[in-house]
Image (cartoon, rainbow, N blue to C red; front, top):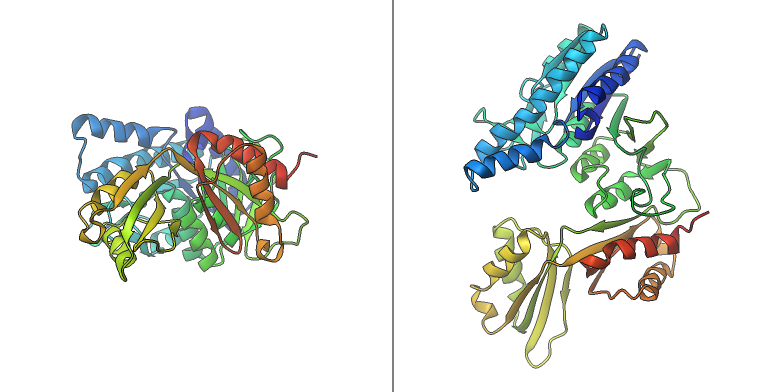
Amino acid sequence: MALIVQKFGGSSVADAKRVMNVANIVSNTYKAGNDVVVVVSAQGDTTDDLIEKAKEINPSAPKREMDQLLAAGEEISIALLAMALESLGCPAISLLGWQAGFNTNSVYGSARIKNIKPNRLQAELAKRNIVIVAGFQGVNRYDDITTLGRGGSDTSAVAIAAALHADKCQIFTDVEGVYTADPRKVEGAKKLKEITYDEMLELATLGAQVLNNRSVEMAKKYSVELEVLSSLNPVPGTIVKEVTKMEKMLIRGVTKDTDVALVSILGVNDNPGVAFKIFDKLSAKNINVDIILQSFGRNNTKDVVFSVSRENGPVAAELLKDLSVLEGAKIHCDTNVAKVSVVGAGMESHPGTATKMFEALYDTGINIKMISTSEIKISVIIAADEADRAVSAVHKAFIPND
């Protein structure tokens, strides 16, 4: 008998038919003799609908109240799934995040899990109940409901698997696993049998929407082996773990991220400490900076260009206008950009990887604005309307159709 954690996203429980489909998957796992904990997201577009309802009332609603509102989506899902399992003759109990022992910090809207007290989970499992937990939420030290941010249900599932030392953590989605690119948009995208935590983390961070990056970080930290698979098609998925078998394929995936803005500061005084003051100002407002490019000083000035999320681009540009060390500099924000990346362990030891990527973009007539590299990824910033063409071209260069 194994302890299995299963997570189902919003599309997997979008309507009554799909809730019953999930119930059958869970029921089969339970009837095979396993202990089962299920983590569920809000149904379909429920979270987006709740956000719109809030905007109709108060476009600047307090984040605490937004968490109170958004947590309701998962409350509906877990109750419906528990009812579905009972109809199949399986004992089930639904628990909200705080009932399942999730304690978080007090950053409303993007809370971090501090710890899980699994007493209630263990007690219910001891009764041979299927435990259904509301993903994406917890409670802070003030007894306020908090949410973990977009994709937080993945993190909830991995946290439970770590706390209970589960034998397996399965992440069910509407695709059959992790692909080398979005199979709905890129012809010839291939499903991977295995992928390392580091590779998956890069893909998740760079725009692949299969797993939340925080969940992958946690899985690596606590050695939780993940399986990404489809809730609609019962076929083997992709295993995410520490070490994978050596394969000929060097590149594991090509991703695009359109949630990007480029902030340019032109004509900055070439004095010590300017870069520190720029990024310290942004850090104080919790604005995360990704790629940074600084030119060599010339005529006592230099240029600084960096990327942030699309939402934070105009905010960052406006903040920096009041910075005294930037007096006389020109500040511009471009939100019509995207980031395209290739990811694969061992790229550093394979010369020519960057050249092949740049050649594919050149042959397609796509201009590169910025470049960033690491041991396992190469990212470029390009015009947003060229992102899909770029992904297809780069994918074809590295992973040609059979």
